[in-house]
Length: 211
View 1: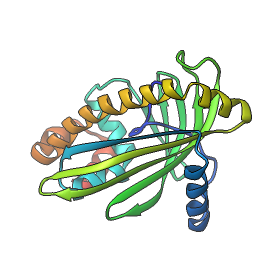
View 2 (view 1 turned 90 degrees about the vertical axis):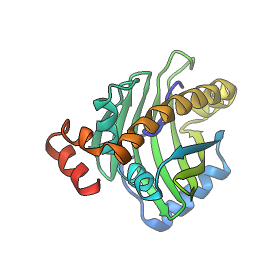
View 3 (view 1 turned 120 degrees about the horizontal axis):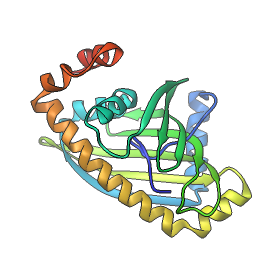
């Protein structure tokens, strides 16, 4: 699995319906406790807390900005149900949506599929993607966490068998994507007009209302 997220990320899975808040908490806890593959890494970015929160809360707009900058891979991000549908050309596709929000964290849930050369068979899975962070001056320090579990016994077995490969790809993709996100964040903070003049339609309206 050579991709995540986006956005973020990242990572990138599909869900048919949005459960109630109580179900969200139970579903998240159960998946974290029974995850087949887990990945965690620390990160530091130069950003205000307000701007970082907006970035995480609006994956559709961030997907459009990602394409505007011509960053790779060329994620295809569209609106779907409660969240966004993301197609990663490396072989991951599905839907993700925000399930929990606090002053120091954002948690996303999704379900989708992996069809990539690094994985020997088609895998469908569900996952939790969580950002924990805090502001220190004009910097954000935090931790990104991923918890994945296969939809079937076969998928779960394959994920466990190739967990090392999956983690390596997760780390590589997150690290590279974060460097590009930092470039977008810098322009949002210092050159928002340069971004605004390149947007049209709903993306322009969303950008104006946020930034």
